[in-house]
Image 1 (cartoon, rainbow, N blue to C red):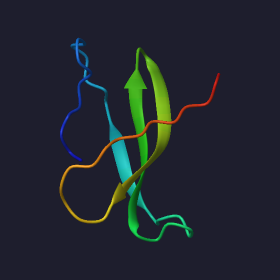
Image 2: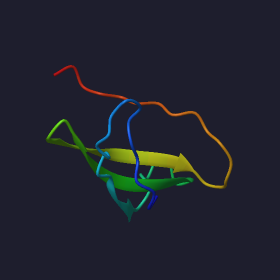
Image 3: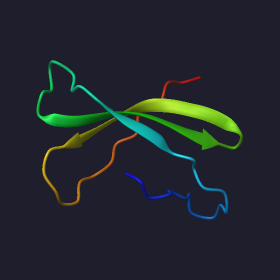
Length: 66
């Protein structure tokens, strides 16, 4: 996860920071990360859960209504 991520159409990198955290008790078979990135000058934090093993996987983003 060391690659610099960029949003399509934007010159500014997302400024992604991540650190590995323990998986949630109900989902012990995932790799879990605490993530933070910059978005239009604001910081956005979240959790990233990835299946163990390699290969491509779909991405689901969940956001609260605010």
